[in-house]
Length: 113
Length: 113
Image 1: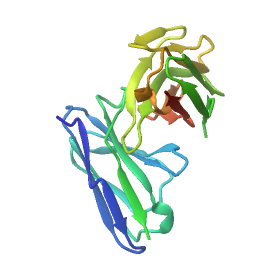
Image 2: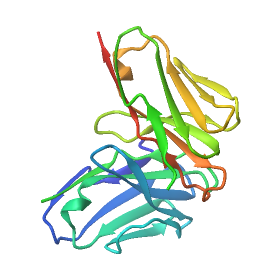
Image 3: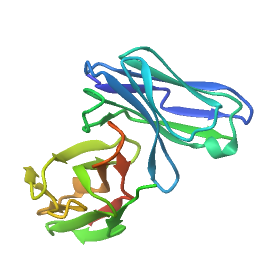
């Protein structure tokens, strides 16, 4: 049973398009996250939701919009994709917003051409 | 913002050797975590540390929470080929936002037969 799952695994698209990445966790956790990992493997937090409420919103372009329909799901929609958006995006979850142990999904490799 | 520096950046070792790596910060942390990331996968939590001086093992892996609270160490004994990957430290600063982790720059481990 996959704990944190993401779809799709790979996403190749052209500049200017809009795309979405989906994440689901079956751990019963309250808090979910989106991270971006660049080509140098640096992991940076983008957003965090706790029970469907946004609690962390880092300096991310407005083109990125997270949505949490329920506490088990956190989706990431990206408008007007740019070349610099190419990266691996990871979803993660933790039991509560005060829990520091985060569990990661397998990642979505986004390539913008 | 806060950065975590990991050392060494990369290591090439022979199977059976022991490995040591460390992570340092410029400020005090109240939690240290160690993750391993294999190619094409998400980071997997190895060990979590919550108290200065704490020493915790997970199989052949041992991690320590430095007594200054500004560093952490990970040791791998008797390395095997499946230890290959990137090891990340992550931490929660004493005065940080709840649930927001800072990740290190990673130590890439290669194991030769």
